[in-house]
Image 1 (cartoon, rainbow, N blue to C red):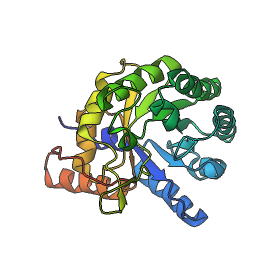
Image 2: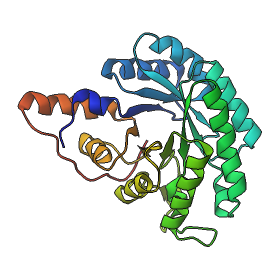
Image 3: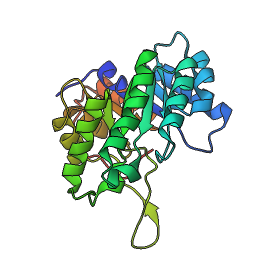
Length: 259
C-alpha cells in the first residue's frame, strides 16, 4: 500500500513526555510538530495551556496524558485531571487503565474508571485513547490468557466510550533476567489483535517501538490510525528522501524500544 506524506504525518502523536524535558525542549517539540504537520503533540498536563499557545493556527492538536504512566490514580483524580486538561485546551486525552485492578479481574472497576474519563472528555469535545500497557500483560491475568485478556480490555473500552485503544505508554519497563529494565511497546501481534477485537468506531494507536518510517507504515498496514513517536523528524525526512528518489515505501518490522 502506498501512502502520502499527509497520510503518515497525520498518524503521528509527537511525544513530549520524558520527565526531564525542560520548557525550552517542550516548545521546540511543539515547533517540530508544527513544521512536520503531525496529528498532535502528546504532552504532560502542566504544559497543555502553553502547548495550545505554541500550536495555535498550526492545525496540530494538543493531547494530554492522564494517570500517566502507571494508571494508579483514583478514578475521581483521573476525571478531574481530564477536566483540567480539557479546560486548558486539550483536544485529546491518553489515559492509562488501572492495571492492577484489571489483573485482579475487577472489570467493573476498570470499566467505570475508563467511562469516567471518556464521559468527562466527551463533554468538552475531546477524544480519548485508552492505554493497556501490554508489556505488563504478557502472562495474562484473572484466569485469562494474554490475548484473551487484551480482547476483554478492548470490549470494556469500547463499551465505556473509548475512541482509541492504545498498546503502551512507552514507559512500561519490565525487569529482565539480567536485572536490567526494558520493554517492547507496540508489536505487530498486539496491533492486529486489538484491531480485530474492536468495532470500526474504535481506532487503534501504537506506542513504543516504532522508530522509523517502515515501522510507521507497518502500523498503518495493520489498521493503526495513530502512532506515538519521538523520531518524527527522522521518519518524515526519510519519507521526503524516498519521495525525491522515486522510491516506494515498504513496511518493515516494528522494532524494540519506544518513546
